[in-house]
Length: 133
Image (cartoon, rainbow, N blue to C red; front, side, top):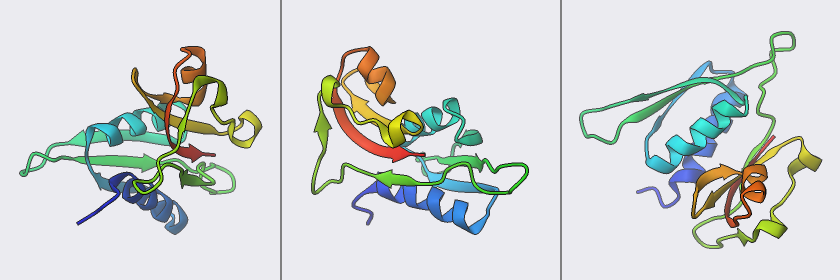
């Protein structure tokens, strides 16, 4: 039994990155799909595909992105902020800047999952899920 599926999702990406894998397969959920779309839109992953399985949960297949010259992963650090034991909520005025604007924060708001910059622009706060840089 997995008590924090988002932490598991981020850990699978982190481990595949450090091991140099090209793809990683992760059990799917709606929140994980939205986080994957944001990572793709922000250029942290190469591509993704949602696959259906027999048990109707599905899988997310993510192609990780590496620098073409140095072969270093594009995702340097991916860190879980809000955990089930300690939720972290911020108003639109207090949303964090990651690495002075070079990284992104992923926020779960009442208007959906979005980056910190989009949440500030839409003037909505929410739960800070993770930092990516």
